[in-house]
Structures are given as structure tokens and as C-alpha cells.
Image 1 (cartoon, rainbow, N blue to C red):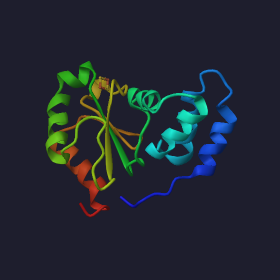
Image 2: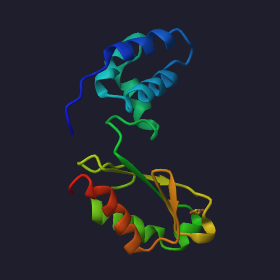
Image 3: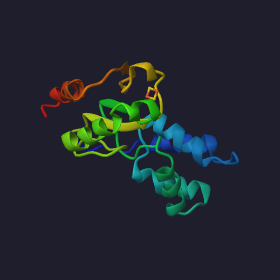
Image 4: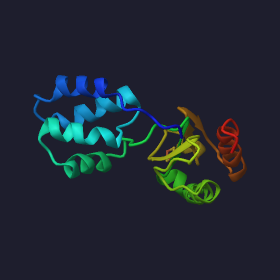
Length: 160
Ligand code: FES
């Protein structure tokens, strides 16, 4: 992935706007992620200093909430449903297929930045399970072949 430069003015603006508010850490992390697409590790010392917290405290909160990313988002997000109906109709085998095909576990991102995996617990498509959501679009009645084709379509543009 290309080297990125830290947007210090944005981070400083966010800190100035939130640091006096009680419980400011989560709103600050959300605002930085909204502005930059992720919370870069280089921002952690600035946040810790502004809130008088340790680096470990800030990093602990970032890692506790899976919604926070520490690297730029992938071009595609695939959320495989892991809830009961999908589980009973093969979701675990599909998850294993993804692990093998991409070398990724839940919450992982491919090295080429093409695809991130996220688990989800019901997409409202239980009658047509197993299901996943790719970039906001639900795909149901998945088969290993359809899953493979969806993943391939995400990676073709990256030349993978
Ligand atoms: S359990 Fe997977 S869509 Fe409902």
C-alpha cells in the first residue's frame, strides 16, 4: 500500500473540538476515522497527550472496538453472516474457504488492500441463507462457487 502522510491539521481540529468534553476518546476516534478513513497509529500520541491518557489506554480502546481501523480501508468489504440460520446452512465452510482462499481470518484485510472481511450476525436474509454482504449488497443462497467468483471479482482490479 502507498505510504501515507498524517493529516495533522485534521487531527488537531478534532482534538480541539472534543478534548474538553467528558468521555471524549470515543468521539475523537470516530471523528478521526470519519475524516481519514482509519485511525493511524501516528495519531495515538497526539490523542493520548490531549486527553492525558497513556498510549496503551488509547491503543486498548482502538483494539477493543472492531469498528476502528488502524490502516486505510480496503476497496471492498465482505461481511459473511455467522448467525444461526447461516451457520446451519454452511457458513462455517464458507468462512474456511475464505481463510484458505485469502489467507485471512475475520477482520483481516488482504495485503493488496482489495478486500476486508468482517463477520456479521444476521443480514435479514435467513430464508435464503447462507448469505453475505459485499459493499452493502446482500448475496444469498451462497455456494462455494459463487463465493469464489465474488472474491475474484474484487481482486481482479487489483491484479491479484
Ligand atoms: S442468520 Fe444469516 S441472514 Fe439471518
